[in-house]
Amino acid sequence: MPRPDSLVEYTLELLEPLGPVQARYMFGGWGLSFAGRMFGLIIQGQLYLKVDDVTRPAFEAEGCRPFIYESKGTSHQMNYFTPPADAEDNGRMLLPWARRAVDAANRSAQKKPAKKPAAKKAPAKEPAAKPSATKKPAAKKAPAKPSATKKPAAKKPAAKKAPAKAKAKPRVRPS
Image 1: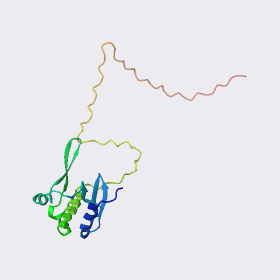
Image 2: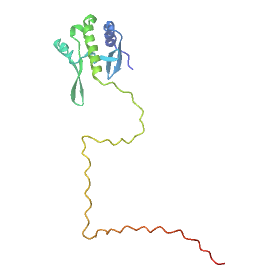
Image 3: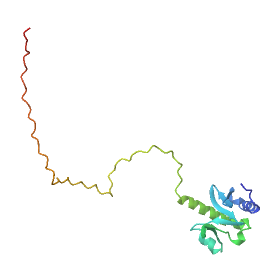
Image 4: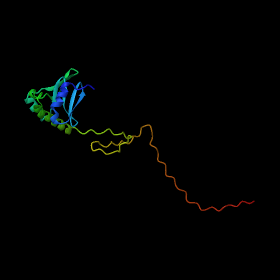
């Protein structure tokens, strides 16, 4: 991992009053996080702070520029803006903008569903057949029509039961 450059170290010093800010190398730049949430980045020698629908108007009103990157011939704008020009080198002026960015990161994290830890796969079970309100029941098949070449099978008369026999006497053979 590359060592933080002077801009990263200087920015961390400016943001000390905010609390424990950490810098992590990523995507050719540095991600700035507070309490485990990324609220800023430093890339191509420029600091960018996270914005959302609540904070974007304030950044735009101050003339801040969005972070835009090129990929596969198209431009993509991210939710990160530069701080106002007069706040970039002044920790006292940068602090309120950094707090807005931390708040935007917190709001963004609340919108996203929590990631579930990967569970072990259980053996596949056949799902129980449930009647579905959206599915129609299967149509019953019509009885097969007798073909013209075959005659219908004649019914066999039911077998009659033989009357119960009287117990036969054992025969004795002459010897």
